[in-house]
Image (cartoon, rainbow, N blue to C red; front, top):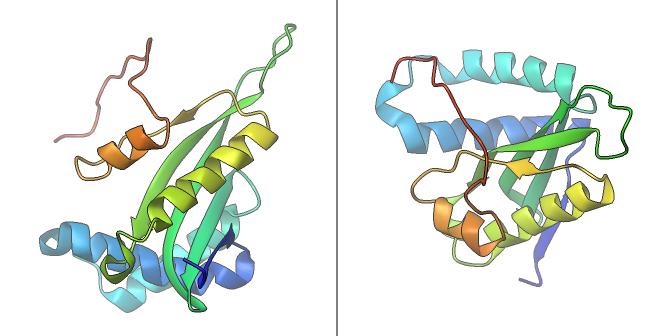
Length: 157
C-alpha cells in the first residue's frame, strides 16, 4: 500500500467525491437509478459544498494519485449538559472503495482514519448502519452491536 494516501477531503476534492458517490450508487442500486448522471453531479456537488466543513467530514483514499474510495461522517450534536462529556457523535456513511482497489486494506485504512479523528475530537460514539457486505469489516475495525439503541424505521422498505 505504499502508493496509497488516506486524507481528509477538502472542497477541491468535491468533484472526486461526487464521482465516487455516483459510481457507488450505480454499483449498489443500478436498477433503481432514476436520475441522469449530469443532474446528479450538479445536485450532489452543491449539496457537499454547502455542508463540508460544517457538520459533515469526508476522507478520501487515493492509490497512485487517483481517488479510489471515501467515507463520510456526519456530526450529530448533543444537547448541552451541565455534566462533562463529549458534545457530539458521528454517523458513518457513504463508505466505498472501487472494486479494483478492494482487498488492499483501503477500507480498513479509511475506517482507522475516521476512528483517529473521532478520538482526537472526542466524539461520544461512531454509529453506522452497515450493508451485509460491509458489516464484517466494520466489526474487524472495532464496531459492535449497540448495548442500548432503539430505532423506529419510518421510510417504506
